[in-house]
Length: 339
Image (tube, rainbow, N blue to C red; front, side, top):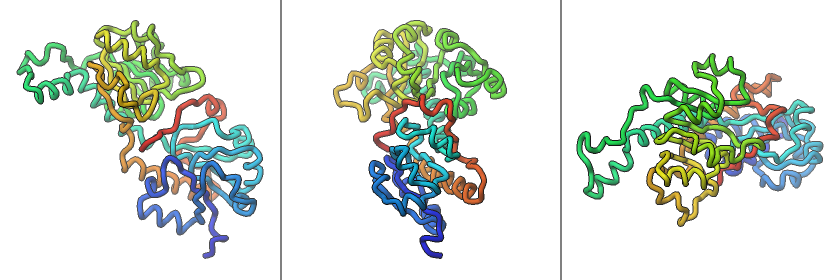
């Protein structure tokens, strides 16, 4: 089989790499079934009309103009392996032409949910502080070391956002009170959670998990007032994107002793060495590593291959999540700068 007989796929997966998301076996399958041209995401237009005219798939999320898309008559799908939907292409043109825009973000759901559970347990039982005290020789034994400890079992649990991450959290815990303005109540109820207003989630929860995407409408919506409305001692766990919170207000709420918190994400990444959150007591820090497992990245490649095979056979993609016409342009999440 010659290159011209194989469908052409443009690889522009930055900040990922094809080696990161495809196992050796999957990479071999990819190259056996497709002609792969790896390209600079910023220069897709420079590939030339012959290449663009044959391209069936784009693996990645490069910036694309309407003119460049017009030179790609065979394009069937953009397979976004970064997983945040950037407003860097004319989505209306893509939808009008029936070009599928899909993301692989659900591969991170279980890893992020599990680290979220770890954060919650650490905050509830003071695990990190107890370990530090032990290392310093200032540990408190038995009940003396549990003066502020509590159980997650039987606690009021709230969640902001109920996409893939929220549903994965539902699988590892139970009893959630959920706020998600993009979903009907029936979907929440079918997943065994209690639909609630944002105010109810903030004011009635002992543990609050935030897994909402950043949109044009919710940037910084968890503000000083939101943190002040929480019960004293609430454990606030931020797992999605830092831009949904006023991070200074979050730090102030923790510094005052009103709440405790854990976060895997920050307003600037990597975080500056002198950032005050690094030394903030009552705050558990993680360096945007919740979902970055090799097993998750390799699952991306498998999903991409499965959906490309379906589309090769004239079927719609089923493994990746499709971007929706009504919401894609509202997304404001930043791509991950480091793996």
